[in-house]
Amino acid sequence: MKVAFFNTKKYDRQFFEAMNSKYNHELTFLEPRLDVTTASLAQGFPAVCIFVNDKADAATLENLAAGGTRLLALRCAGFNMVDLKRAAELGITVLRVPAYSPYAVAEHAVGLILSLNRKLYRAYNRVRDDNFALDGLMGFDLHGRTVGVIGTGKIGMIFAQIMRGFGCQLLGYDAYPNAQFETLGAARYVELADLFENSDIISLHCPLLPETRHMINADAIDQMKPDVMLINTSRGGLLDTKAAISGIKSGKIGYLGIDVYEAEDNIFFEDLSDSIIQDDTFQLLQSFPNVLITAHQAFFTRDALQNIAETTLTNITDFEQGHPTHVNEVQYTEKVVAKTVA
Ligand code: NAD
Image 1: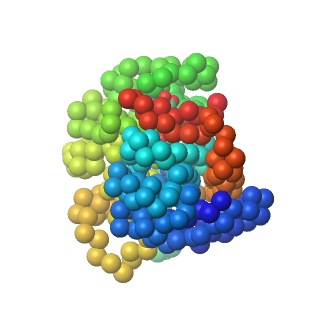
Image 2: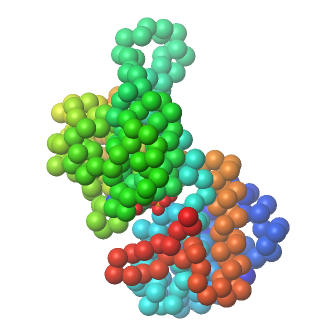
Image 3: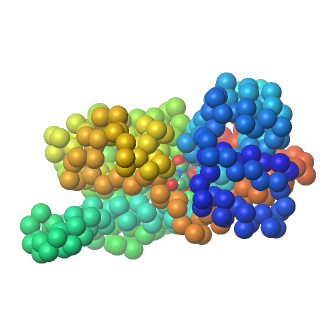
């Protein structure tokens, strides 16, 4: 099948070309991101493959459909960048990669916790500067601390297991609780307010949906313990960044580790080191010593890229062969439901 890949980097091409020897699709790698102005590049391609920061809004989908596109293959898990209602109306099937390596993301979240707690990013620079003083580098034992896990799906569960390994107590919140969480030991589901009130560390692992946008806002932050550590490796829109900045300035938030940012679309995945970044909120966030930002790299392991390439190409093959109900399809309903593999 002819597939136009938008927004591709060297590593996408490398992993997809290697994996495609098993599938033999006709892959065309394009550098521009997908949006309404670039959709015409996909003219004549029945399948289009996109990533988290492409934009498949209504107008873009209309252009794709007019050019003959019938499949939107997401090479990621999240699907908040697609107007699913319009896609359904236009007869465009949306397939995604629901799980490629939940370990990659969960382990990165733990990496942020360890780096922030023990200030490894500051220590690294100090030692390189022959500054061997310890002032300002004091951390705390993770053992015995309470970790709030919001979203106990694939990534949240692995994250919870790792934190149990450190000897942490776990509080979970999920719109659809799963029985396995409470079998982890020292783990129980609570109401969100209870989780906010009693967690030393809070880590977000739920999807971005209309009802979860800004779930961490000023009101939520008010309810948290002083000096709380907030970790977001899920989607930037879950966190009200301005409220987080106020929480950091007031001292309520002691540590903030984020791999995602609500306005990341114009910043992440590009080398902007020679540019003047115009996003004042992001620049202010960067200026705090207790904030650690990575640029949406939690998924970025060899294992994950291989799995992404394999599942995406299998999705395309299955679509081409007309599999009627696909386990990786994201369908529009009044409340969006993504069928996920168990
Ligand atoms: P998943 O579907 O397995 O788990 C999500 C969990 O969130 C489910 O248990 C679900 O019931 C729960 N949930 C749904 N609505 C909720 C609500 N309103 N409140 C609380 N919980 C709710 O997904 P996953 O594979 O664990 O991925 C979690 C998120 O991680 C994804 O949505 C994606 O945005 C993000 N992600 C980020 C990266 C990265 O590189 N930073 C990579 C992959 C995924």
